[in-house]
Image (cartoon, rainbow, N blue to C red):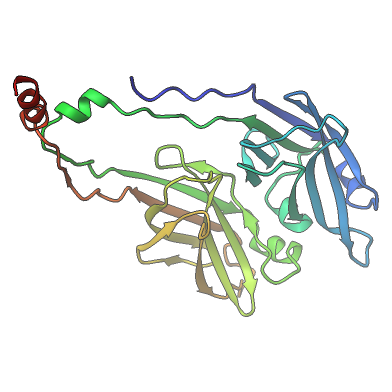
Length: 316
């Protein structure tokens, strides 16, 4: 008797193309991207352009997936829902939003994306197409049953988990710093890297913002953190080359669901000469360290001490 394997309902993961992106950003209507069928329900994926500028271009795109409400609406307790916007290759995640529903019914998941950041992060391909990925999966928690005989006969023990470290790096390249600054009009707008995996499959991303109230900043973020997922401590550093040459000291930060990104301030980066390199190459080196468990003793009575009173009573 041990832990039973968790059982999952069928999962659906659909990549939905958004055609005629250049028309979408000038439209003031909701675009119905497509339908996703899951566990007997129909879900609609939509995009709503909002906040138009003086040229008639939207500043914000609201991407959402929602259940088609009818009298057969079923509970989505335990359902994991995610929305992703992929890069121009249609292979890598750039923007994402996740929702783990444990008790309440799922009706709608919404993700807000700024148009300038979407375009700067190379999410629109040459054919004027954007790709949205919608994933829904209903999971049941694994149940564990104790080993009764093991509890009775297990001797005193010390349990210790080894310390595990995982290393990696990722590079975000800005081809033209000048063009990026011209495209990102609002303070705090930036360019995002695709998501990359380091540390036992954990997902990470970089963001570079060239201007924010007289400063520039870099951001290291952790993505796709499920409820109950353990915090992760990371030692990392940034190395910039091109318009600016800068190498940071090593820093340490613990990432969890409530604290899933780290911002690193820089002096505002400016291109001072036409002869200066117009690129920005950001390299982030990470070491993910799982905290070392403190050894602890499990006090157990020996088989003799457990059975002695029973044997004594039997032989009275």
